Image (cartoon, rainbow over all chains, first blue to last red; front, side):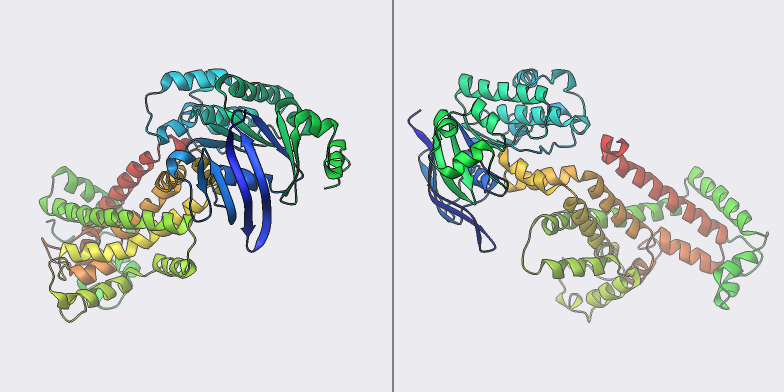
Length: 243
Length: 269
């Protein structure tokens, strides 16, 4: 847990001249579950997009697996493919559940992965629906397909953007169980963005509070919730923060 | 081919300036319905007897429109995808030009291509083997390309823009290259993309102004179904013109069914 998989230094992101994110320093350790909490519009999803190299930072640098990237030096495809994201609202292709689950593998030219796809769908409890059109699934089932699709890629880092928002307790429990297993059994590094501080408490080893594009506090999960250093963190944890 | 329907000199009727509908009413044998029925019977007869002249016209129509559609698709789909997926300076102007192109009257396109390809025109002067001379099937292909590619591009752009923009981000997050992302979006928009091709085909298989102008309706060389229909109507052969019209409709129907089949299961959902 000592090696940093990500090192962010002075990372900034601007849209139309407006700075929406400024992270002076952030290290994410290999193999940890790191939660980013904060109110809407704090910059959490923007930070995830930078971590997935979907957008370049406006300023600063991101060191990933020992290689540094910046606005002038975008990440190459092979490194980009070692990270993936499960989004809050998964957009599935208008194809079968099986085709959706195996989509990422097909992008990598892996077409003979039937056993892995079957195992992943089994893990998320959707093997019976493999031939069904993905667009006929419920929200929870769609999210599980998205999770299977990401798991099959065996990424070094899995970014989760509010993966259980608006889901029922059964699906929340199932997804949290899968995510935990991924971390423990495969050592996948997980970065979880959530509004739900209880979920952060259940899953994460370290938590960071992001407010108005800046990291207010980073701490181990117990310290973050039991003895926050910053009064804004304390207010957020107590639920006193109005946003 | 089949002789004129006989009796009244319909050429005189049309040439004397009487509108076509009125002319049809005075056709020997009575009503328009009779003409349509005779046209249907003759269409079946022409097909059943494998009329060589008819097959030559049908083959040329399909060859010219098929080739034009192929080029329009090769140009139009990538252009539509670029306009739908990327943002660049001048994009609005290109879209405005495209929309204008979607409404071009074929006869104006024909005139434009005619002037470009004629010996005194900017392309005709070049005497290059790549520039087709007027009154050839190749010049008709050029004219039909100009008519149909804006439709293919415009409808493809609309279809691509209708795909959830989040899809691109999620596909990229799964490790897709730019090319793979574009292909995935096009696949998701496949119903609209096939409609764009159908619209392009419909616009050229049925047009007459452009092919008449640049092709000249020369027998055994540039005569296609639509120009043959015009000629037979002018000659007063209404039942033959109707027969050709029925065959044209049938061809259009069969082609569109084939393209709908390309949309696959999605069309049934």
